[in-house]
Length: 179
Length: 200
Image 1 (cartoon, each protein chain N blue to C red):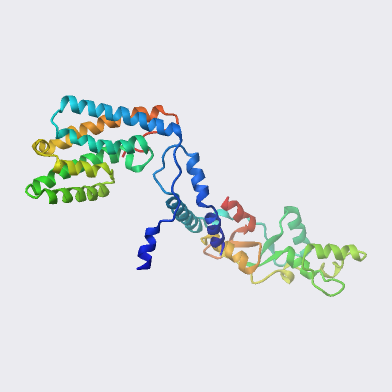
Image 2 (cartoon, chains in turn yellow, cyan):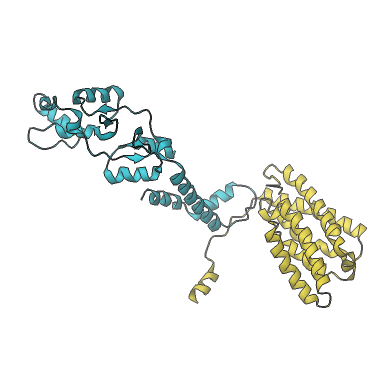
């Protein structure tokens, strides 16, 4: 029992802060990446609910522009995680259309499990799965196309920006691996 | 016992060292210093295991081996060792099996000091030679190799790992060991220095 509470103390060192150029490159990448998807979404998919998916991409931006070396930020995880989670989110809603609370938890939990199993763990994937359930009528109407547009298309645009911006920076290299 | 000292070496860096290294690498590293330390320690343990098991005696031994017959006079043996600049050689019997090893130590032990003590090192022999008018070596000139060699010899099989070889060096306090094939025939020899080369 004491062991249990001892674990909560932490007590280990936290990693160092990054330098200024890293901060600026993260800012620039995220600015351009989110500009691209947000602009397209608001101009082309103006229905309020479909635009929700931007939230999920905001989380992805932290990883693919801010933690470029992270395994969680690599293309396999970023694109694969979103696609798989989107598919599972849609399926979960179709499975439990009358119990949104259950579809929500089942969708997110299963998305995490599936991402683990396919080596595509990408934290924003959980949001992508959740949005498929709670995103409302417009998103439900898309069915499995939700995984292609807005999710898949948006991810590819963000990836393209990441490939360009992260490789212009001398101190960066992206990706570490593709698959 | 060897592996313990090596493991201690790998534990010898602090989390501050890791944090310093993380600062040197630009970009955000998605790992805590303690996680990195754990990975490093486990990885070095694996590397050590691999080294232990993958590098065998036959990979580091010197070959061919300079040998002497057991009936060789120790004068000839000494000349042979001097010519080749080696401090010990395996002794073969008439069937070409290793029956002993003869080393500098064996010579030293046989050169009796005036005071009856045994020479424990080369320097104690030098001291003796300088002290009296000449060295008392005449009484051993007629001996042959099998009179002074260390026998039975410590030997190893060619498939033994180099970690085990180093343990044998420590255990028997020896500096070289003949390597035998599965038919117990001599195929090489390992000196302590060969192990140093193998590890670096």
